[in-house]
Image (cartoon, rainbow, N blue to C red; front, side, top):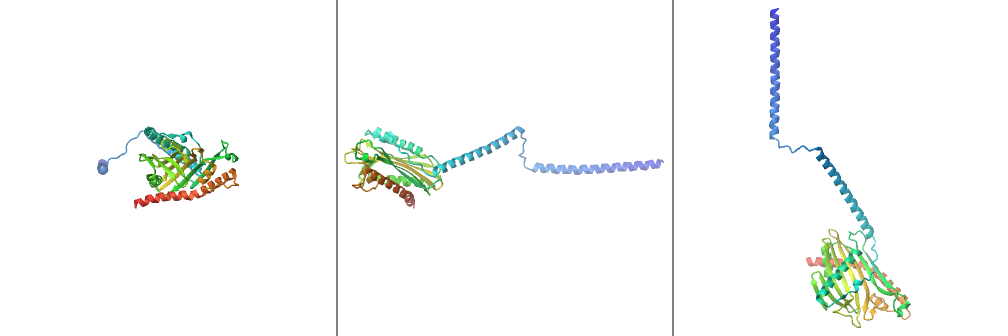
Length: 351
């Protein structure tokens, strides 16, 4: 019996030692694994992960959502503006005929006041240009609209038979040019100033503002003009030409006929290499010492043959209207040709 107990005790001890040895081996293996993992963690670059509070994460989510909504609103706003531009550009509105009081201003002889008058008149013309043309990119076709303006007679002359006299003409032009705005602006400035050197009277106020006197020997007319360039933004250039009606230095004399009015041209950069040219011209009936030019004189200036003996003033006025309508049709191609030519001249200078 005693021997049996001793054997059992030895087996139990042997099993216990085997288990200890097995546990020790497992622990050794785990220690080696952990040591290797620790070594890898030491050699790896430091982690950039950091703990973020839930409030901060919620703020980022709301900010991202707000930015997406803002971009959506901006995109819709741009779309609405482009649609409005497209609608307004499909056909130019008829030019408004307005004989504003500032167009009857007299240029005085005093040098200081005179130069101030140059700036004031051209700034008024700029204001008129902004009102006539909304500031937008262009989506419509090239077009020219010319209108003959008349009014009831206010005197007891032979013109009473027609019940109307010609006040002047107004026009609006839209031309798209496939050239940069710098080239187009340079070309038009050259076109506007190329004849100034031969003018009998020139006064350069600065590089962008000049007064000059010119004579048209074929029509027998003269004009006193103020030309100015404005650069409201890098993507826009505006030219204004004010033909003044009264000038103390160059008074109107017998036998003379003075044309007057205002012209505005706006150049807008639609995109790289594409420029929109829009202009408004208001040409009032020329002045003489006896007042406004007669109906026959207006016909002559517009290329209408002299009135025949059996033509009534009413018939002659309708001939003038027909001439204006025909002129309008021809002007679309002519304006495009002129614009392309001024750009070609600039290109030729660079080569």
